[in-house]
Amino acid sequence: MPGEFPPQPLDRYALLADGERGSMVGPFGDVTWMCAPRWDSGAVFSTLIGGRGVYAVTPVARHVWGGRYEEGSLIWRTRWITEEGVFECREALAFPGDPHCAVILRRIIASPDRARLAVVLEPRADFGQGPLRAPHEHDGVWTGAAGELRMPWSGGANARPEGPEGHRLTMDLTVEPGTHHDLVLEISDRELPPRPPEAARCWAETETAWERAVPRLQGTVAPRDARQSYAVLRGLTARSGGMVAAATTSLPERAGEDRNYDYRYVWIRDLCIAGQAVAADEAHPLLDDAVRFATARLLDDGPGLAPVYTAEGRDVPGQHRLELPGYPGGHDLVGNRGGEQFQLDAFGEALLLLAAAARHDRLDDDGRRAAETAAQAIDRRWREPDSGMWELSPRHWAHSRLICAAGLRAMARAGPSTARTARWTELADALIADTAAHSLHPSGRWQRSPGDPGLDGALLMPLVRGALPADDPRNAATLRAYTRRLTDDHFAYRFRHDGRPLNEAEGAFLLCGFAVALAQHRQGHEVEAYRWFERNRAACGPAGLYSEEYDVGLRQMRGNLPQAFVHALMLECAVRLNRPWGA
Image (cartoon, rainbow, N blue to C red; front, side, top):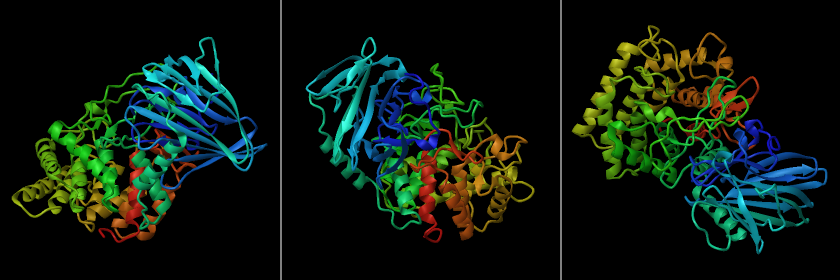
């Protein structure tokens, strides 16, 4: 029923993900968001943005909420303290995910006290348009369909249909002390076996798979948080190797300002940033995944590389509205215009990723051909205006050219010196010389573009990635000016929108905050690097998830959740701050 599970501040949500799709779980045990069968499919649970459809397991008695992830996994444990006692709900998507079938595992654990809960299952396919049809129970298993999806549900034998057509199943559930009760919901676009999977087997396989997927990361300054960020990145990564930017759509970056976007797609830039973060530690599997996806897209599309793809490597649909209320302060939106843009920096980020793989001896012949393709695309297209890192109106953005220079230099250093690597170095020199001629501010720092003397957080990334030597005075001047004018109390902002105070124009941009930490570390300012890292590391909720922006005044997260590139730079900071730069 509308309003029964109202939207909460974003720090109250946890992510369940299996690589092929993800769901958001709120403090009432309510799965309020999940698209199936794929990341960019229609949602079957969409109350987060005002749709119909929810799957909730909620204490009957008055209660307070808490929760935590089991370390190194996306297995979430909701903990309720009620007037009647304390109990937990352990939940996950069966991992690793099947592209055609999601399995939601929920285990209510009554220890030490009895657990009394109300259970509601109301799936509605296609963002609420397709209600559950003809649900019926046989031998303890409910079966039904919503839209084109089949949805067997076990563990709810005592549920009863509600409404004229039984679109909603409800159940009063009591779990006695010292016992547990399993609920298993399958959501599939294909025929399923007649018997549902056994809960105990699913749990055991999921636990084992997460243990194998997430490295220990003991050589970092924050091993537990680093492992959690790695788990988030793995949960957002499909079998194709594509890592979606976030699990959600339409969560507003600024209330009432029409800044709502669909991030359920793979941005080449974000994917490459994540791969480089992983490579800063070791050649963990997520590095190979990123290289595989980026290589395939470069070899298929060459100079026409799109900035963003679906997780299957297909074109992203254009934006359109769903006519839902949206998350408070925003509106509903699916699709993204980013696929229509030219973003030069994607080629530079791809080269940086491929160079990182080469340093770990993880680059095959296809990867080397992809690097040549990216270098040729830069040579062919760097004089064109592009939309830049923030997807703005096309200009000759300084960041785009500098990050391409960094990528060319990195790739040239990653292998033996040849005529080809010499060409890459010459092209990098030409890019830097041209940028210096047109986008170097009179004060000696980089500016946004030839016609815009302002500062920009994007300009931190070429500094971090080695477009110029660490001691180049333009690096120090840019970092010094940026921290003086676009940061406040160790929170960082992208650029100045207008004359308003920074925190009134937009939220602090966590990617930029972690980038400052890396830049300070590369400049040898270790105390400042740690201050920046710790300040931005704390900008999350109990689940440890990061959104794109952070409202400093209200101490609340803003934008889609969780934002992959923020987790990536948090992970990279945790790795790099524990060792000298370049070690």
